[in-house]
Image 1 (tube, one colour):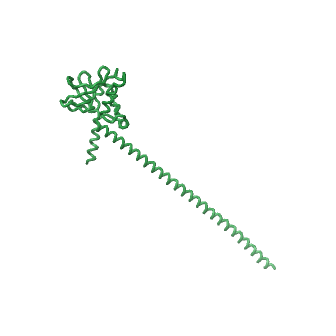
Image 2: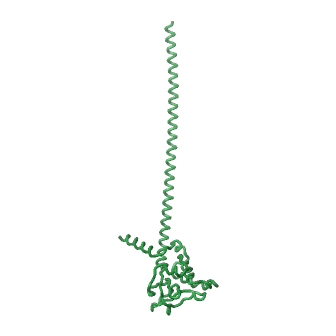
Length: 231
């Protein structure tokens, strides 16, 4: 029963989430949501990196560091992951959208339910407060727990693949050994059959030779008898 609920939960997650390449997540340089935010802010250290960058491009670049491929178009981004309808429900790392096509990545949750978010302002990556902005929606893309889960799933799959490959190689070696054994047995049987046939041929030759010798002896005996009778 427990297994059934796990399968159902997995299926529901698959239906409610977008496709994620687990291999890219597992092999990505970044491992946590903190790495997403760090990657965004670190762009300021590269002259000209954010000069013409949009918020959508910033988001796509930042999440790429943890193995997620997201579109850079804001409308497409607003449909990724799971929608968060209330700002108070947002988590660090979620995407947040405000009126006026403003958006960013949630970096801090405040006690007053407001947030700070990372976004691009005049060609520079900044952290701003949501105060004074009208919240439209949020999109939950991933979390540390989900990232870790995806990596574990990938590792488990790779172990299963490696085990299956090792088992297949072991089975192939066993099959090759059995084939070699069968071929040797066949060769031995053919050799034994040939040797037996040679013995049979020799026995037949000896029998034929003995028969000729007997015929010759019988003929000699008959000649002696005939010779004695004629005298």
